[in-house]
Amino acid sequence: MLENLLLLVKIVSSVCSAAAFAYFLRRHKYWQSFALLGLAILLCIWIFFPIYLGPTEVAFPVKIENVTFILTIEDSTGSKATLTKNQIFSPKSDNYLCHWDRNLAATGRIENFSTTFGKITDVRTVSSYQEVLTEFHMPLRKNEVYGRTLAFDVIDSFTRRVESLNYEVDYPTEKAIVIIRFPKSRPLKRIQKHTIRYGAEEHKSKTLPTSSPRLIVWHIEKPEVGWKYHLQWEW
Image 1 (cartoon, rainbow, N blue to C red):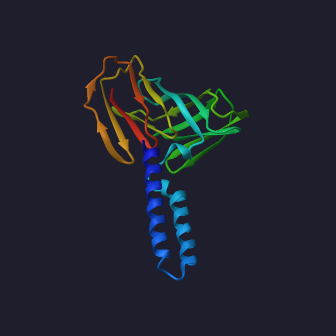
Image 2: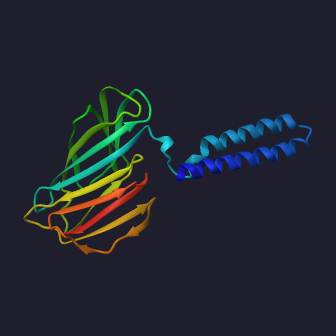
Image 3: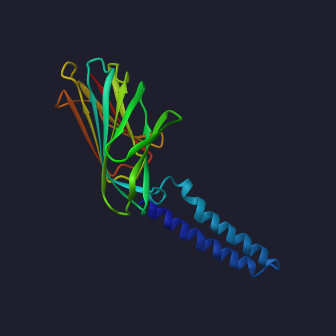
């Protein structure tokens, strides 16, 4: 929807600008200079206007068909956990050589990254997030479907009575699933879901008891790029 709106706005703005300049040029003797200025303005509209409407699928090299996050809290103190990110994706161009996993963060530490497809060659910190670069052993083909898993340890990050997990969407995605598994010795009591759009809360569910004391499963259809899907629980 956002991409279609962007295209419509760009077409309308271009037509209106062209009509206005055509009328102006007919009445001005320095028409050549103004014609060049008009072309420059139209070019800037087409190049830079998407920045102000937010991200669109055109800006991303890959589309995620399905992503499943599985957080397993391994002890009752919440000091040790593992997170796996299972991803089905398709490149938007040929010769797709590497992939960035972005928006990875924890209140404690994230360490021991591993992947099932390709080789991790870089881990960097950007602001409060970590980003992981995976290079593939061969160029991937446009529109072919591939599967991969990224896994890492999460240390000292779920030690409080009320804790949370964020899924911040980094690529256009058809479907996402967030799963949290709790230890038998410390079951789940209540959960709450939040949807946060560009820093402003879009939706907040009531705090509800869970049907399973050891498992949370959240299905998200067509999550929006840049939005945060926030799970908070009491245990």
